Structure formats: structure tokens, C-alpha cells
Image 1 (cartoon, rainbow, N blue to C red):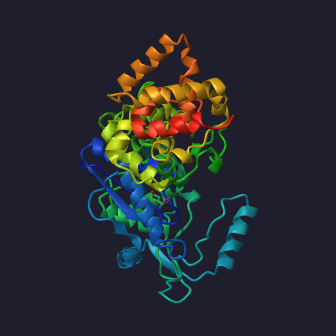
Image 2 (cartoon, protein in one colour; image 1 turned 60 degrees about the horizontal axis):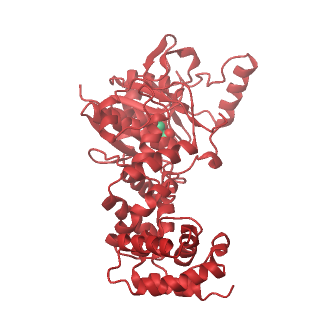
Image 3 (cartoon, protein in one colour; image 1 turned 30 degrees about the vertical axis):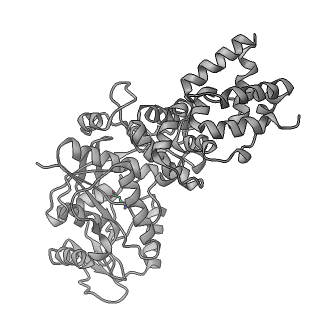
Length: 463
Ligand code: GLU
């Protein structure tokens, strides 16, 4: 059997990390078994669905590296298909027309509630033999008895008595199919064999299984993934990281880090934390999924991202950093970025931070703002050292990090100074900061002319 999974987002918002994780699980399962991963846009809610969200979801999928197979299904273009299956259900007696008003249905629910039963439609129109007509819906005829049981890939065996289930609406008064009908039809037509989705859908699954049975379709294997919760084990809020994938992208996260993080949030392989993508594909077979909610931990995500950042080839990292610098107003050469990166990868946890640190290399000398902490080093002695060093550096025949390092050590030694009398004033002059990479590396990154300008400017600052 070929494993076919799917991800069916509703384009009513950007792709959030919860949806992203569900997509990753489905993608990994398909890739593990050499199957297919399909994509479907559930856009039947015309008032809330927007093209810009479809575009954004697809862009986030691509950014995460989740490629899909075959054509994308758009539910809004498939109304005839749904209606054909609804007709089939009507013809086979598995469904019926109903003209009860929403008020009547609510009153039935009220009666059930008053009796201490599950609120539901009482089956009034089941045998009235109604035909299509304005204001009418189509309902599923739920069998009178029996149980619906399935073995959930995450939660284990689940069993529900059909008496718990309602004669649910399949086709609304406006002719649109309901979620449950459209999902079953599409999953069948796409050949879906395995479904991972959020456990907010677990109560829909028995209803969908009834539909699979009524339509004579094979039933896929389901896995309901618990929600991601906040560090306090409460519902994940925006403040905790319940954000769109695109926001993490803007924050400078590395997609592989986010994928690694989200997979571990609900799946484990011993206590291993870091997984390459090929490793995940090899190991993820739909087992070892956690049935209790996982807590989102922003510090761990940061740690993982820093790990990926440091492990990334410099060419790739430079290519990723370039658009961030462009966004900050510095449209600069990728090779130049690459040459500066080694100074900052160890000091950064994300690409936005990296790009921010590099801006100082693309500013002009008079744009350098010296932070308060860095001003201390520019006292009389510091400025005097800068004046002298200016002369020595301008006379250097070869300007390189090694030559600068040698020059500075020589200077300190010959003048019986401490290195902290030259390092901090230089760093303040060059980048305006009290901390950062070695001054010889900074100067090599800036180049001779720019380094000298900045040293002169700081040496001449009034105390
Ligand atoms: N469009 C549904 C959602 O975003 C899909 C649920 C499912 O996977 O069946 O919740």
C-alpha cells in the first residue's frame, strides 16, 4: 500500500506553528514510506477565506521545506463533486432532506439537554420523504445502533457509541457541503491512507467514519495530535509563541531549526534533540508520538536555532542574511557578508541578530553611534592611544587581520601598556560598542581606509 498523507489548511489566516507541526508530521510520514504528501485548500467559507492567506500558507510550506505531490485541491472548485456524493447518499437511503428551522433544531437540543442526554437533532425528518427545496438541508442518517471504533496513531484505541452521534448536516441550505462531508470525499478522492491532524478534530472522526461506511470508502488511519500549550501548560497564547510561521521567518529563524523544534514537540526518539532532515525521514514512522500536550519552550527554540546557525555553511548563511540586511537598508554583496560572518555566528542566535550586527560594517564613519558603555574607553588616555595607533596603522604596508594583531601586540609591549588600554578604545571607535569581536578582525572587515576614518573620528572627539 502506498502511504498518502495530506495537509488541508483553511485559508482564513497565516500558517501557525500548530498547523505547521501537523503538516510536518504528514510530510514526514509520506517521505518515510516513499509515499505522497498532498495539499488541499479548504476554502468553502467564502466570507473568511482569502487568496493572500493561501499564498502565505504556500510560502510558509515552501520555506519549511515541505514540498507536496500532485495538484493542489481547492474545495471551492469541487462543489459538483460533493453534490454528486450527497446525491449518492440520498439515493442509497443514508441521507435525507430536512426542513427543520434552526429554532426547531435548537428546541430539540434543549429537550435532550433537559433529559440529561447529549443535545442532538431528534430525527424528525428522517422518514418524511422530503425532496430538495429552499431552506432545506441534507442530513446523514446515523445507524440506530452500533459502535464506531478506530485505533488512533497517537491516542490509541477510541470507541464511540453511535447513540452519541447526531444526524449531522452534510449540505447546508445554501448548497455548500459541510466540513465533514467535503473532507471525507476529498480524502477518498486523493487516496489518503493516513491522517494526522489536531486533536480538536477527534470528535469529528467517528462522524467521518460513518460517512466512509455509508459511501463504501476505505477508512484511513487517523492520528490526533495534542495541541501545543504554553510553558505554563495553559492554552498557547501569542505571547508564548502561538504565532505564524512567517513571523518566525521574519524573526530570523532557520527553517530546519523550526522543523526540528516542532517535530520534537510531540514526537521523540530517546532523548535526542537534534535531527537532520534525512534522519527525521528515516526515523519518523508514525510511532513514538506523545499523547499529552507539549509545552512550547521559546528558550529551547532559540538554543536550537543557534545550533543550526553555527552549523550552517557560510555561503548559505550569507545568502540568508542578505535579504535581512536589504530590509535594514543595506543592499550589499553576498561575498562581503560571507567574509564578515565568522566574527558574528558565535555571538548570534538568529539571522535578524546577525544582520543587525553586520550593519555597522556598511555605515559611514559619522553614522557610528557610540553606546554609553563604550564611551568610557574613549577617555584622554584612550584617545591618545587612538591618535598614535592611527599613525602606525596608516603606515602599514600590508593591512590584514594577522598583521594588525601583530602590530597591536608589539605596540602594547613596546610601550609597556595593558591590552585593555588599546582594545576597548579601538572597539568603541570602530563599531561603537563595548563588546564584540577582536579589534584586528573588525579592522580587517572594515578595511584600512574606513578603519582609519573611524579611529580619527573617535580620537578627535571632545571629552
Ligand atoms: N481545514 C481543517 C483545519 O484546518 C482540516 C482538518 C482536517 O485535517 O481534517 O482544521
